[in-house]
Image (cartoon, rainbow, N blue to C red; front, side, top):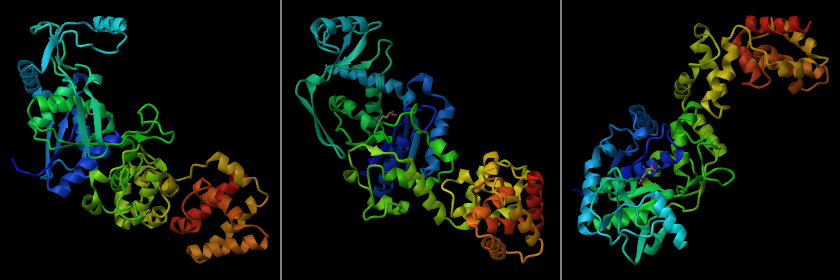
Length: 467
Ligand code: GLU
């Protein structure tokens, strides 16, 4: 066996990919790349309701989107926990034979009754010395030794658990199937895992698992439990309350690089003041010892700000390419889309959008025959006493003016000044006539791209509606 570290990411398929899981995977991946180690993907699919091939593919696709490519030479797997069931059972029997485990026939109800009677919660070790043989419905429990279990965690530091607070936990269920705690350890041993980086919610499992490692005679791995992600109310992110699915951010137009960079900073920061840094720098600098153990706020506003920065940093061509998937449900008829027009508009959008999914709604007026008028915007902007005048006069002057955004702007500025008005006000009815909305890309640049005839036609049609 080589000495290079072996990390693993061991998701239980849930039908969607949690952003917290994404961060755990990235921490493991960054370490793998820096240390020349191996990243093992193990799908923990022992819950039968959870092993559908689509879910596995969903995990592989999500990892690939994050840049964790399953064809990379340092990537190993996927392995499936369900395929190792025999090994799990074998290890359980070994623990029994060694005296580290015993059979128990108490039902859940009986355990509860005993707990009630004694006033002590949980299982009381009733069958420890009853010498039961295996039998139908009997569970196999681990015999937790006396003393204390010390977990040395790279993030949490030294955590000591008194063993009398750990009940004799179940290794095999009454139907003979292995429990997560055991399966997870046996797989880690089998896959020669040296470092376990996982969510903090598993910390309470760790002393139990470390006892299993010890009982199986294998040195436990290096542990690192990374902090939970919380929402604005400092509550743990939950799929019922919060937006936690990576796919959702992806479909809203968060760029993978922005997501990766942002996730890495949840509990860790690169040296210096700058948080937006290239992936290679993250790989070079990331250390588990530097991960903070307090809960990390998953701040969507900050993620969006990262995304905006990443969008601004793209080349124009890359931006145009990245926008293409978002045109699939765009509101214009496909045949009216014009790539040259979009290319002219793209620089105006690239400086403004926060996510790529905003793009179609910012340019749809270019590719729709008649802009869809937002009625509130119409009511707000067309009720002024100058609306008809500005539309009519502007329409008349654009018929003949020099065709570029500077002269278009100069025209409207002159008109606005002559009336003692403000450009912000006089622009509004024109914008609604041209785009249907009150907000959008810079108006005069957009008009320049739209062209003279179409501009006049839209101004006329707004005037007709006003009359
Ligand atoms: N399958 C576990 C989960 O998805 C992870 C266990 C581990 O990382 O040790 O929470």
